[in-house]
Length: 111
Image (tube, rainbow, N blue to C red):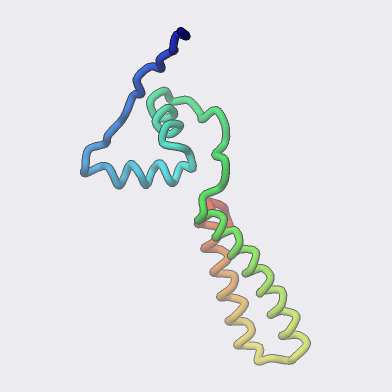
């Protein structure tokens, strides 16, 4: 008969009810797994590796950033070619710059 190696019992953490949502939000914002987040917090060590993939929100914001750049370029080209109302074109380009700045801020980058 083979001997089974038994694993150590897992250490679990159950945050107080009042802090549960804040804990989940911090874990999600860190991009780490719950285990990696707790290890980093308790032992003040960096995670052994990067998160496997960016958060969905970061991917979405990055995609929006690319799309705003495309729209900005297209509006600029169309405005020159079609002699559009300069005021309307300037407003549209300004709005796109504001969206771009908001996307960069959401990604933690400077515009």
